[in-house]
Length: 403
Image 1 (cartoon, helix red, strand yellow):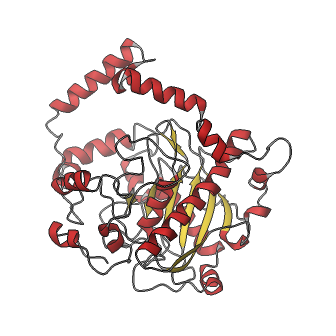
Image 2 (cartoon, one colour):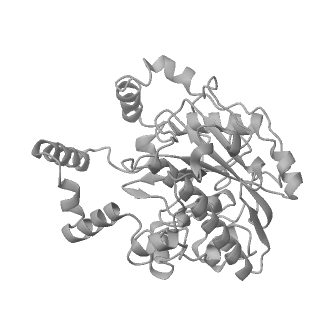
């Protein structure tokens, strides 16, 4: 999912007082345990594990969901009262005269929305005491500069070509932490494995398009590519607050310019890993120069929420999010800014059902794949990440040109 921060959105001022900085993962204390070779964490043959089933409990639940159907699976385990409350809410939503997905109904021009937002969100949920504090709390991030030499005004990631160092940042936030438990050890090892799969997939695909791409991502071999960080914000619920803290960390603690010079690179990719719980509904997303919008910092990065909606994130999602940093657009939903309509999304679904910017699951079955990336990079994707100068689909759909 690509997430841009448009000029019309009010933004959160980050709190930087508790940022914890380390030079690399090898020296970062709570994270360094992860690849301990002791008997507590024996080597796992992941190919064998894939053959046996990625996660027995997960697969069992997956089969149950298919057998019982989504609706039965959703309502199972919920009380009659909970179900009635949800059904009442849906009925209210359907009858709500403001339930019309139109910017005039939802943003600055709608007094009803403004009144509800102030009265019910920033007072009722305790995030803020009153509407007066709202304006003080939401202020644009003031960049401290940072280092790096980037092409044009496209931020830290331009075309997905040449030498590109991939910086990994492991974040402990207000609700999610990386601990020394065996489950976290497994999740951490998956971040390394899936990043490897995603990077090799992108390099192989670039070669098919006649492009030279060298992603440098092994932070155990190159220590200046791995970091850990503690922030106060909730990466899922307060994404802009988290953005600001992460931007501050990058600008003040990572010498991106030196990294570019070392690896003879015009661009960098930055991956931020959050050890989220399976229960969250939010999915991985990218803070990037998207559809021509500028960010409050030059640095683009991808949030990888390692679990959501009952599943672990896939290697294809790693590749999908990284491609956003280099200009790729989401193809699974309409976007007026780019010019992508629902009719065109339907065309993509019909003609390009396995496009990696349309889905990060297996084609047709929509089952997550963890041992490889089986999705395809279309002409449209190749155009937006700088692998080709022209796309017939951009012309036929009337989409925004690559920025």
